[in-house]
Amino acid sequence: MKLSKASLAIGAMLGSSVSCAAFAIDLYVDTKTEQIYAKPGPGRVHMGSFVREDTPAKAAKASSGKTINTPADREPENTAEMAGANASAAELAAMRKDLELKAKMREARLVSEIGSLEERVKEAEKVHVEFHDGGPHFASKDGNFTFAMNGRMQAGSQYNFINEVQPATGSNLPNELNSGATIRRARLGFEGTFFKIWDYKYEHDFTRGNGSLAAGVTDAFIRLNVTKPFSVKVGSFKEPFSLEEAASNRFLTFIERHLAVNSFVDNPNTYKTGIGANYAEPRFQFGVAFQTEPVGPWSAASTSVNAAGNNPRNNGSGDTGWEGIGRISGRPWMEDETKFVHIGISAGHTAVNTQYAANGTIATTPSAQGGGGGGMAFFAFPGTNVDRTNVLNTGNLSVGNKGAPGSRQITSYDRYGAEGWLVHGPLSLQAEYLRTNINGIGYDNEHFTGYYGFASYFLTGESKTYHVRNGAANRIKPKQRFQWNGPGWGAWEVAAGYDYLNLNSGVIRGGQMDMVRFALNWYPHPNVKIQNNIIHVLNVDTSGSTIPRTAGFNDARLSSFLTQVQVDF
Image (cartoon, rainbow, N blue to C red; front, side, top):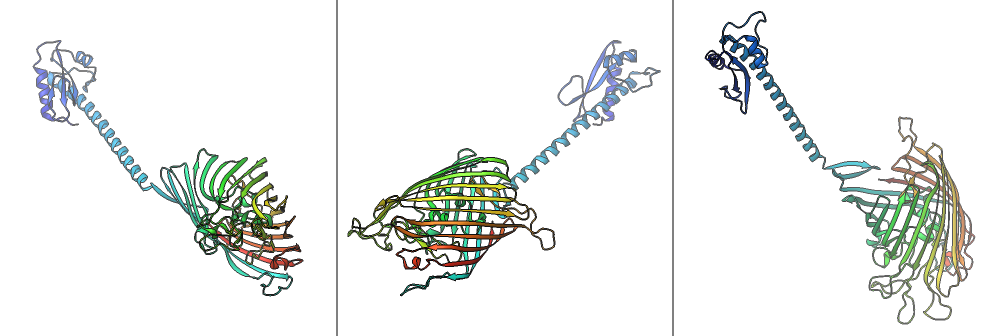
């Protein structure tokens, strides 16, 4: 603030008019109007104390408490000089306050501008995009909503270099396996969260379904995350059963799952509709579900290789098949994520509906209106990925007219499994034992058994990874990704294992088979995987089978070279 000459003159005149020697007056100047006041008020700055000319300067100095800007060895000659000195001190004080005020105003403007900028940044960041596991991931700034795309494509080939089987008879098709190539899986889906505690997933496989669009649905559920480890979901999802089945087919060591897992879990369609609960933490997992048939009409209740599925639901009579199923797993020994032992058990009871016509017969195939059919069959193919012809096959376990002599009817089956998995750095050992008991009319303790075991080793030093929620294998991330002009070669894995399945029991003659598998897998990138498998069947025993195709594989010698290229996100 700068005081005008008029203000200083007025101050000098007031100072010279004071009549009392001991009288002093305080003056104040308005910082906006520059008017002089004898009383303090809003916006007024104290100029100083003014006294008569016969009052010693030191008294004025003591009274005002301010230092007058005059030589110390003389007193002011008149009141005007005293007023001028006091006015100069007041002017300096006012200017100092004015500078402080302007500095505060500048600081306030700066804070306001920064706040406005932050608001604009927040507005721009309300939705941001990231890439998780190679796929786009959208999220709101507050984290309440997320959305992500997922997909996979697996292209495979099969070359059968040993294919010795019995010749077909009559009008039956040849028994041998065919070489070729195929798109094993082609899936596209989306998943995400809403209001943080809910999540959802939908996935469609375009290679599934016998021509039924609904049968291509795999995962389609909504899940409530009650706490971090505990969740409940409703919709279509995998049965909680088996270590190898719990792992996504993206993360399998071999191209195809083992015989018993395929026969007891995959082929009857592991994706079923219902409600499930899951508890998962790093050392312990528990899953239980109450489920019924897969999504869609009759063609969804059976897979592309299982014509005898569960109960048809389109206009079909009879009850729907239900199941209760669960799995407990955990890591009782664990040093870290590269050194642990995993064990687990699974169990489930599945009710099977067989639909009989009014005359007591069973339709061989469901009608277009959904009537007839039902029952259950178990079968297996020898780990091939293009020609998955059933080598073992029980046929429909509901046989003959209802109540007729020699007829049989499956009413339910019980499944049990035990699993073990050791990971110690680059070394991994995995094994499972599975059993299925058949219940129904005409059956007495018939059961099927299967088991497998294999070892794998990463030549480049990686370790198998663990998916906590699934209690199974997870994505492999190479220590060094493959680069054309760099030092990285990706991750390289070798594996070998034994596989056995027996579908012969009591009156059931589905056959038995054992085989060995060898694998060389290359992971150039976390989202790219190239697998090479050699499978060799050691023995096939289908003697006694009433199915010509199955009987034709008795004592067959089969060996194949398989490849699969996978890209997923």
